[in-house]
Length: 416
Image (tube, rainbow, N blue to C red; front, top):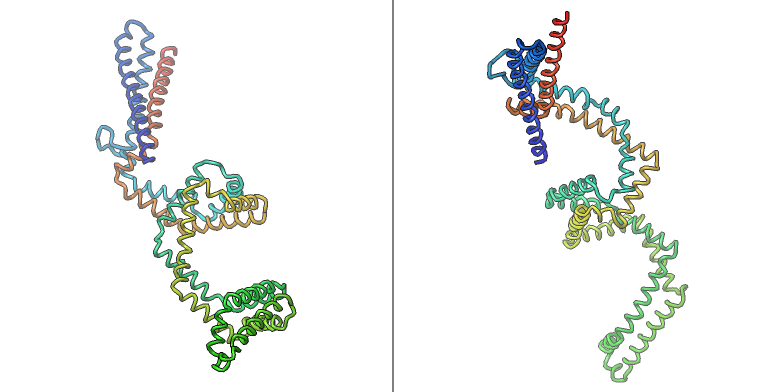
């Protein structure tokens, strides 16, 4: 729509200039007729007649030359006219060769890219993004359109498969073992043991009746008859309560020491024992095979895509918050870090040169075949619309310059 909107004013301006050039030529013809009739009455009209005559010759010559570029003058099949329609294939090949020789040679692209600071431009934009602008809005629309155009079912499946494959290939057991070992070295496991002991005490308090019922059920009739089951249950509960209190107070309690020793053995086994590593790997695979985990993994992409779409649709929000601050820091780094800037610019040059080497011939072929596929009328209209207005100026200039030359020659003849 925009290219068409531009094409209409160009055609309109060309028509106006064509009317002006033709009107000037007609005016010269009328002036020539008047001067011819008035010349016997005064010699000055001879100069006017010479000017008008030469102007008509110059205007007609330029009209013929301009018209011959696009069509046959007056519809007559004069040789070497309608040059552009007859040579459109050669024009397409010449244009393609021009692009190939001046723009799409890898060495030329690399040389031109040396003066382009891609990293600096990106850094300036990220560090000080304009509050508004076509660059931000265009990038935002492009990202949103790209995300919406992707095949969500296929892409979601690809993301899910990639994440699942990565998790399955990850050796969890050594990682967990090293994490546990590091936690014990820094004594970060102590709060966990404290929490376990506290949880055990609260669980005991909440389940006293359950313990009494279990003792009463399992005790013999003699113990129940003597009422010893209640005393036994009370002793068990008091003993367990005292144990949890002692473990909570005394960090050197034997049971806590035993627990720490067990954790240390577990950390070593997860790193070095093949049987333990296989067991942990089996647990990992069972967890990944759970449908709920599969749905969670599949939802990661949708949540990420939804967030990206929301940010892309709102260019102001996209550069706000922590993400915007991270982008601004990246922009400052791109401007200040000469080594990083040099690496990125070098990558951009190589990418552009590689694209020219890989796709240059395809682009040239596309241009040539596109022009060859146009019909002669389309080529004529497009080229005439592009340069026709300037060609009409040539007609006007030819008319006026021709008239001045004729006037000069007449003056030289009269005065000589």
